[in-house]
Length: 439
Ligand SMILES: *Cc1c(COP(=O)(O)O)cnc(C)c1O
Image (cartoon, rainbow, N blue to C red):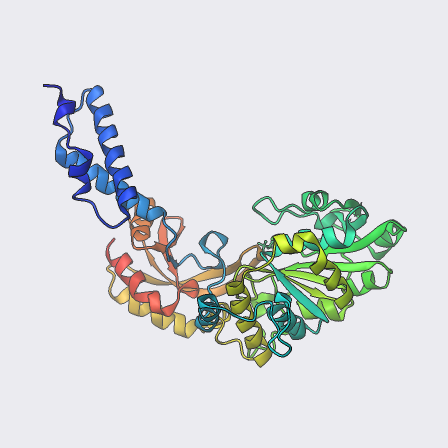
């Protein structure tokens, strides 16, 4: 008999699968049977149990690809691949309450007339940094593209050669410039750009002087950059892409300024120094949802808001609700409810206590001093002292796979597998412990 005829039917396999919608289970069953047929053609003789096991593995693989929570034990606080900043429960509750029903998203409750979606989070974030106006779009890449397109299309934008950076994911300043229809005027050199370089480049065709925070790399040695305050004296509109969204470099929302922030520039300081427009991300050092925030002069913000791209890039109501909550927290002067700042400022003693508790239940585990990083393309080369739990498995790669089966993403350091606790929510310590114990 043809061994293919002995293979189970799709229905028979399907009857023993669960956990996903029927359509997806049927895909897995069909694929497993197709694979079994191919195996028979090449001389193997899979049994019904083999086909079922293969189908179950395919269902498992499908489930693995669904968007789901994981535990970030990498020590990279803003891990772009892991969703950057965690959003606080208050901000999530705000998003849920606005998402659930109707809201005054673009409606004025005082007059009963049409309002603007920029009147909520955008206005509050502007207030938090001392700017006249603000608006929120999908992410900072969109914010930069929109601001350039609205303020400088068909005209010249002057940028230092030291700031023609690639932020990652293909976001390159020269390409964004071309995409927004501006002419890039490069000034200075890679390592040094002086005020006079900008001054010489300014003509009647100049629309903007653009300063891009080189978030993800750091130049040391014989370097010179020109401050926002010096650019502001030159005449043209000054735009700053601040990237990380550190609202104020003095961190008035924390009891003390963390030293690892080093010289990370603040949005408020750029505004104070005379920047006309500043853009930044919502999900980096701001600690909120993915968003791009533009703050600055009211007349420029009005021009930006009217541009057709503003409509194409606008933030949705749940993002705006979460971001409004984040803005209110900053305005309250106490950011302890923002998970990013909570993680970043947890004391080493507290991390050590948690690590010891986890290590106690895992044979061969050690508590180790580690170095966490901010990540998300911010604060390159700067580390945050941290504590982790380390094991030395025979095969680190296999151990990483096993941890991932628990949803725990760790990191390897030579032959050690380390779970860095600075990026882990304490509520997830039990998951980390169980995952490590399974090794
Ligand atoms: C991160 C970053 C961007 C891109 O921001 P997204 O919110 O990821 O789109 C742009 N410019 C700078 C300077 C950045 O640091």
